[in-house]
Length: 113
Length: 112
Image (tube, rainbow over all chains, first blue to last red; front, side):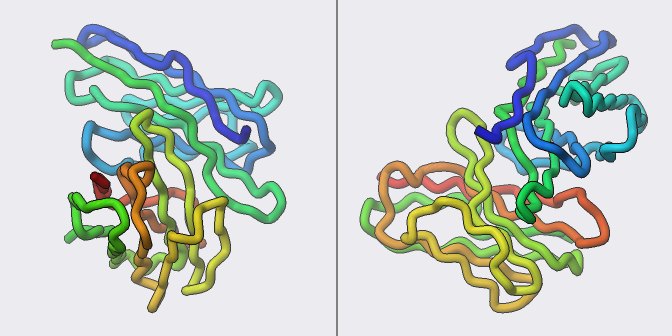
């Protein structure tokens, strides 16, 4: 299966705490992207990290990438109730000239006020 | 202005019917996609078009037929709908100069 895997599947924290979500994948990648999906809505692109990068920041988001371990993490600092959503990591692969994102089942994050 | 718009947002129909979902993007992107998201939230790519040319066609029943009349539109036609087709279908687009995808808000299809 080319499916990526997020861990944990569900996470519940209090407002103000940090949330860490992990992702593992199996193929070689060009880059890895994180998306957020609010309930009943489309996915929103959060951040992209290239295969030659190890860490990237965007506001309260910090993403790391370890290509040797084929893993990535997303850290949301000082979480807010509005961060409640599902978060998906999506490795972008060029394998076999078939350029596409590979999706897992996501991490469901609940931030309690 | 909606960047990627899909219509309809909800679609309830009986088994055996034929239906279409439309997608339009006003971002000037050259690649468009159709995804199916099941009840477990797993996103499965169905089709991808680049400049109106089919470039990805995953293992999808041939009851599903995409049509791209121009770069800004990618429609999905489904024949002989089955119960298992019930899902949320997302359209997305991407520029060849960037890798981030822009998604539509989805079409919730319910086959009864």
